[in-house]
View 1 (cartoon, rainbow, N blue to C red):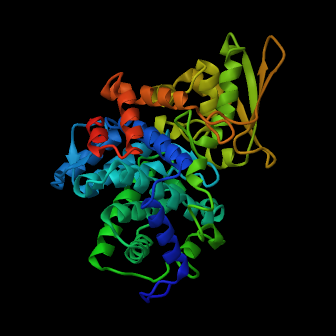
View 2 (view 1 turned 90 degrees about the vertical axis):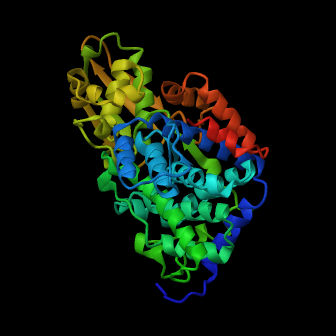
View 3 (view 1 turned 180 degrees about the horizontal axis):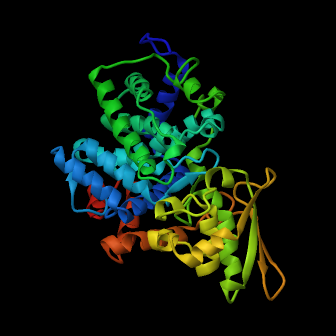
Length: 449
């Protein structure tokens, strides 16, 4: 990469477009997509607030004297901006229940949420400004993800972590009042802080990637504001994207945002807390479960699926709940056995249950490139009757079959109620909706603890 400080057009244009979008009212469809994404990811962050992973991070933060005003959703606890971003981003992605952009497999909400919440106390943005910063934080991740997909992910990178830092840097730039030139410096600095690999899937480190993306993005914006600079055009030819992917589609960055359409409007919301590529098969399993009186009757089953399913979720017998989130066989097994697949079905107890393990061992994955990512065919053999076949053309929660506002709110209610009470999700939803009308951000913060 060049060591000069003058930016060429790719990074400069990208920053100008993103910050320009944040400075104007969001189009109605984008505003709705941003609010739905924000509501969903607040729910996942609150739900994980008391998890062992977050507890470890909070203990480490306390040992470093991390007092500050940044809120941690779900807890009556505040931290300094760096630790606040790290903890919130990790919590939001912890249960693999957050939003998903199916074309890139990026989960943009976690890093964007953590970034804006960490900066609200010091920047005191209007509701519209907070929502806009969140929106471009997501959008920037998705545009950059499009530019390096599919080569980047196929090579083993965890794209949520690697792209998240760029979105976080731009969201932070918007809230900190940086101009496009300074934001370009922030992206240049963020390019040296991008990290995340798929080897971490099924461990505490995977959600940490989103937390680090947020914390590093905020740091990059602060350093850029102070005058630190790096390579001139990190997103352009010869820049970091060409290190991250063997094939880069630079046209995915040019003209991004208004006039070209927003990728954020294609963001989706998970119906199950596990890898999204298994969701079509899990939909099929839950449908089939109503037709099976006794799971002991099952003699075998096959899942005809997109090749990403065995590539990402091939684990046969996971040893704990974290690993079960990356076992398509586990998702199908609990769907068949319980007729549902929520957080409880991905616990350590269920992951190690004998009956679940038996069903997992009877499931075969049959990859077919002709099967779409949101489709699957499940065939089940039974001892005392003919086989059952269930076809899913589009999984629930996909772009073609999105969750309704009511379904999304029901999901968030189930996530938030155990932590903040039965009525909390409705209050959070109302506070999120008021942001679009320039509501006070303090209303939202008040509902998070």
